Length: 183
Image (cartoon, rainbow, N blue to C red; front, side):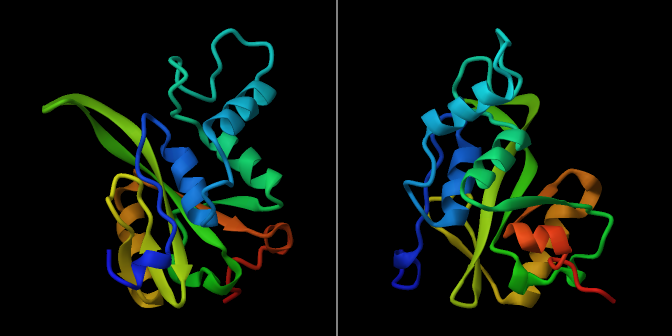
């Protein structure tokens, strides 16, 4: 890791905990959430179910968007689900704290690639004027670049309709829709 990336917090993938890693990476805080915290949110969301619909049946993670949204609320933040039919160039990046993307990802069993697609969460954050892909599957943060390069990256992630984009914002930004530039 070079000097610029040494200050950036980045969790690497464990089990099916990509949502946990995406949250901690976007918040740049290794103590923001633990697996136990997210499991407790799952139970709170569906207290009377034998099989919790908000996580993996095996309890290894694979948390859904409801868990991410509830977790962000615990930190005094809101989450806006971005309508990918809109043009990302109208995002007011100055009012957005971070980004969480959900994309389809192939499933592997060792070297064997299975014909199953799972969803993978990863975070993006602007740090000192540079946007970084904080994907937990990467060994280190990956520099995306400046605002223009970042917007091109977002367009590519949402292309084809398979990717989903969550905006991490303050509650007042969500209420006022000030994450979106009026044009």
